[in-house]
Length: 133
Image 1 (tube, helix red, strand yellow):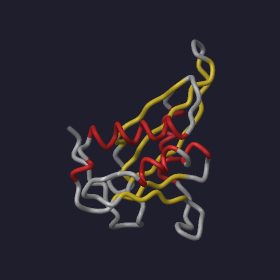
Image 2 (cartoon, one colour; image 1 turned 120 degrees about the vertical axis):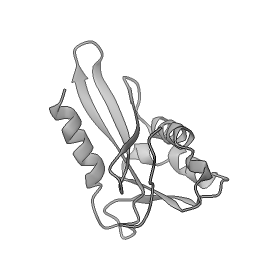
Image 3 (cartoon, one colour; image 1 turned 180 degrees about the vertical axis):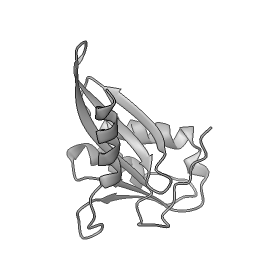
Image 4 (cartoon, rainbow, N blue to C red; image 1 turned 90 degrees about the vertical axis):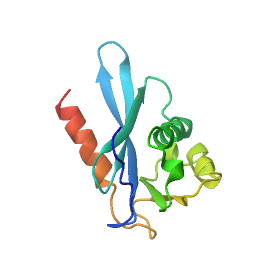
């Protein structure tokens, strides 16, 4: 298993997420999302869908990521960084607010007073992914 280092040492942004869209021959438009550790730059988990890529899609991605890497057992706070898209609200925020585990999990939004920087780590992953299709 990949050793995860989700941390806030550098810039308060522990795990970044974003959705990109890819046109495929078989399925048409495909939504792809990656969860990336913004410290180690490791891709922790990813998923795709031909359906609606809304907040339930992102919430499920994070639930799977936390389960896969035992992140509910971490002691250090975990910050989830995303853009302000609707897929990063609703069910994702509700899930974050209802986590009962040792780590404090927060959802922060890029390009806001809370975090004035862009979500470049996730955007760069999409660029690499699309270049290699």
